Image 1 (tube, rainbow, N blue to C red):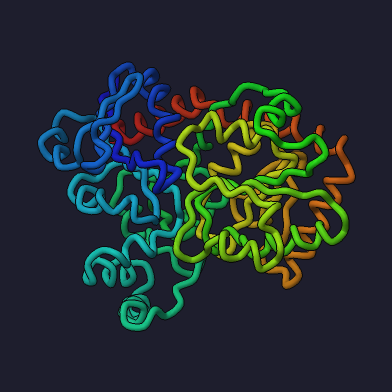
Image 2: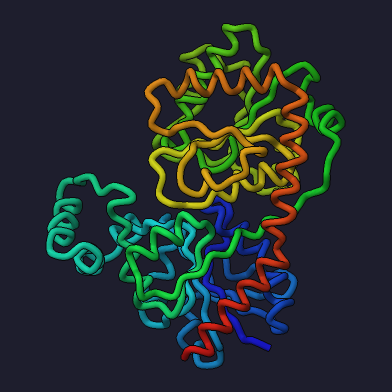
Length: 390
């Protein structure tokens, strides 16, 4: 029996890490043979589920002495800012959802940010950090991760891709690093035709899906430009966008510019994961491009594959590790990316048998590599190795 505490955001509207934690927690509690205490921000601390219950992050200091190991679900977005002080005062296993923590540190105090830049990159890093705070000088990935200081002071770090593990091994050679795949529950194998009928998607429409927080890094301009090319070529393409838009891109303003208003269904953030999975199952293809890339493993891409939906991604980092049988990979820095995306989509439109084979391969990959029960067991092995080393 192991007494674990998980520190994690639980607001799915702000971060996919919330869905990740909810997927993992029941299996982790079962493997640990003990209810898990989840510490989160004040707004989310009334949530609970099978094998876990929540408390405010403010309660962690008084509870820490009764916990064997604290596990931090850590990312780069503002949704993780509430755990900043706890990370420093109560070290634990850090699960890095983003290899780069530059913007996380940049939102903390000036001294903590500059110290993190200096720790990772010496005096020149500290100078760059001050310059960034003054006039937003570029701090690019993977030249600068700014996660080194957190990794080196933690008893262990868990990542979700071999890309991340290799990169961090080179930067933090004395750190205890572990690669564990993401937990992705396999949804029911839905009939595509019946699902499309329920969602009022016409049988002859070529439906593409874009899922997750919509910002410039997801390349929405590339996607809608490719859609325009396909429409001009006579492909009956439609798109469904599911996810919160941030300030960098507004679909409602961009779609009319290319005459795409009638070809796009923008649903915004959808809390019901079963409904999201229905839309995924209805899609012929899902797209998840990423540039710039910050070292993350995309849960939304894995959820696409879990429903059996063929994907188009960038050939970079963790995306490059996906089996070729499940997706098409495009170079992220290609100057003609809209044309390449349009060509890939057109090829899939013309090859329904290939899409069918990709559906089978996609579900098989998630079922064998991302089973939450197996992931929870690997978590426990990492946790046990940390406790034995103390």
